[in-house]
Length: 248
Image 1 (cartoon, rainbow, N blue to C red):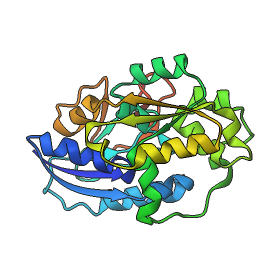
Image 2: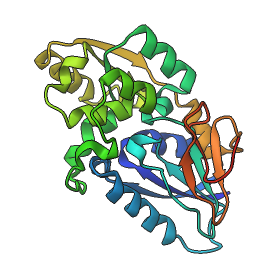
Image 3: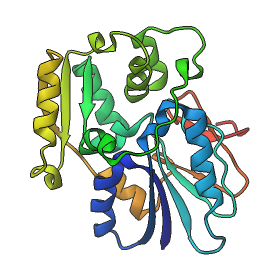
Image 4: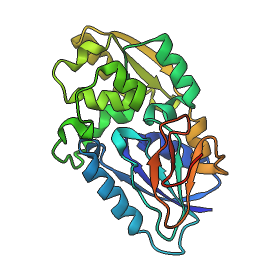
């Protein structure tokens, strides 16, 4: 298959590693992580890139985003189907499954996750629109409520907008892959943890879910297929995302 990838730059190294092992062919675009600061702007940019894809050129468009900060809400497939991972946020894809992420989160509450992408994205100087205060949440929520409803990564974005957000964390966790061992990212994460008086931990990443995202055949349990004309909406259940207007 010949597939188009439209992804957050957070996944740059991981996606490149997986494409090198895939039998499929790819055309890749990576968008600034800064769009998470203002989801309305981010969604608009993602949709623009979807709409700009040439008709009849690709077998599908892979959307490299979780439901981060509502970044998928309302995205519509044009002439080419979309394939989207069922993930509250990017950590699911770095750890290989929703189940592993949930298990670690419950066993180690107060963890802030780092990857090469998280530590490198500001160095790339991507576009960073003005923050949307509150990110459409309405009344202020507690950190635990936001984690329960939006996922750990989304809660992290939201807490960034509030004063003293670091008090909700007690440790930093660097998600490590074999291709990142020679990079200075671990030292950067350790330094940040030291500055914030957090315990530093490391855990092995798992690319199996991301590899399946690039390889196919995209089982319904892990991925949502969006046919031309259909829109994405949150499902507020274990499916995470669904086709707008369709019931389970």
